[in-house]
Amino acid sequence: MVKWIVLAVVLFALVVLGLAVRPVLGRLPRLRRAAVALQRRATEAEALRESAEALQTRAEALQEQLDTTQRRLAVIRARRGG
Image (cartoon, rainbow, N blue to C red; front, side, top):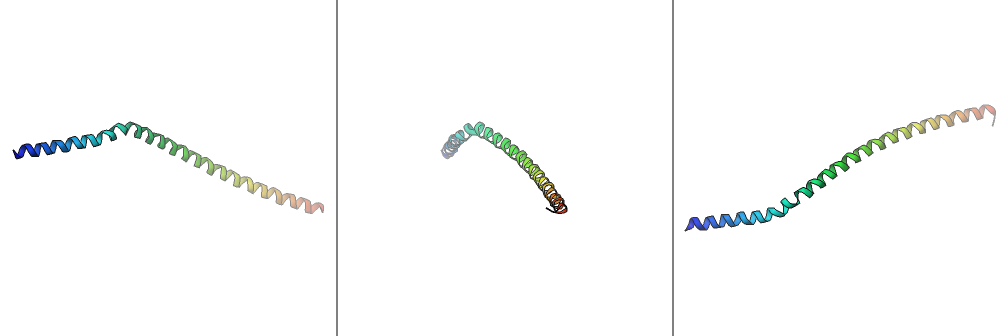
């Protein structure tokens, strides 16, 4: 008699566990797609970050060229007396 009660309790627990797990298993494909999309966006964000860093470096180089040009122009104007 005790065996049947234990078996019934175990089976009931397994049924409850199965019912609890079922919705999660149903969502797994959507979760997987979302994870793939997030990974793709992270890769795109990394590429954008690298592009922004390259652009920043280029802007700094251009600023240095502009400063040099302005100094040269100031020297030329000073030589001309104007």
